[in-house]
Image (cartoon, rainbow, N blue to C red; front, top):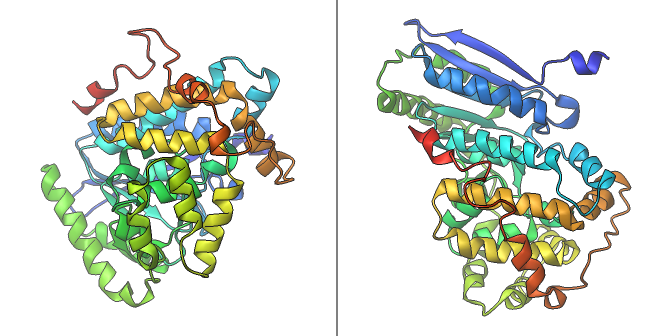
Length: 381
C-alpha cells in the first residue's frame, strides 16, 4: 500500500533573488529507474500547463530521482498486460497512455519558457521523449541515451520521426535500427543535448540559477540560462567521453544511399570495426523485430516532410496498431517478462515481411476528425 501512496512526481518551486520562481519536477520512481508511468504523465501534464501560465515561473527543471537515471523509458508492463488480456484487438488503455504521453512531449517541444532537462544516467525511450524537446538539455559523464524499441517489437516513437530526421546524415537511421546506446559526446554531436556538466555539480548549478535576475522576457531568460550553463560547462570539458558515433560516421552517413531496407541492414552488418559499441549495435540489429525495422525505415522517410504535430499524430496511430498486431507484446514478453531473450517474431527477416502488414500499421485507426491528437497544433498558442 505504501508504494501507491508515493507521489509519482515531486514538485518544488525555488525562489530566485528577485522573487521569480524556478519550478522543479522530479520523476519519483528510483527503483524503476524513473520509468515513465501513466500516473507520472497525468501528473506532469497539468502541472506543466500551470507553470507555463504562471508569470512568476521563469523556467522549469526536469530531473529524475537518484543518480542512476533521468528516465529509463516508458513503464510498459501495464501496456503488456492490456495486450495480453485482449490480444489482437484495439486497446483503450494503450491509446490513453500514448495519447497523454505524446501530449506531454509536444508541450515540452512547444513550451515558450526555458525547460532544463538534467539527462544524467539512463535516458531511453519515453525519457528521451521528455528530453528531446527541452530547450536546454544537459548530459553528464554517465549519460546513456538510446531508443531500443527494435528489441521489443515497437519502434522509436515519442517524436523520433521528427528528431531522428534532424541528425547528421544516416545517424537517425542507424540509431533507430540498432537501438545503439550513445554517450554525452554523441548526444552533443547528433543534436540531442546542448551542454555537458559534471553530475556532482548539479546542486551548485541550481544555487547559481537562484542568483540570476530572471525577467518577464522569455527570450532573455533563455539567454540567461544558456550563459549560466556554458559557464558551468567550462570546468567539466576534460571529463567528456569520446564520441562513438564520430568514429563510424563515414560509414553511417552512406546508409541513406542504400536502395532499400535490406541494403541498409546489410551495410550496417558490413561496417568495419571491432569496438564493442559497434559489435553490440550489430547484435541488436540481428535480435530486433523485422517488422519494427520496416516501421523505422518508412517512418523516417515520411517524417522528413511532417510538421511536429503531424509526427505525433502519425506515431499515435502506429502505436495503437502495433499493440493490436502482437509483435510488441511478444517483444516485451521475451525481454522483460519471461526474459528468455528468444522472441518469436512473426517473420524471420525483413525480406519476408509482406508490404500489406506495414501498410496496415500506417493506416490511421480513426476516421476523419476523430484523431485524439487532432487539436495538437493549437497548444502552441
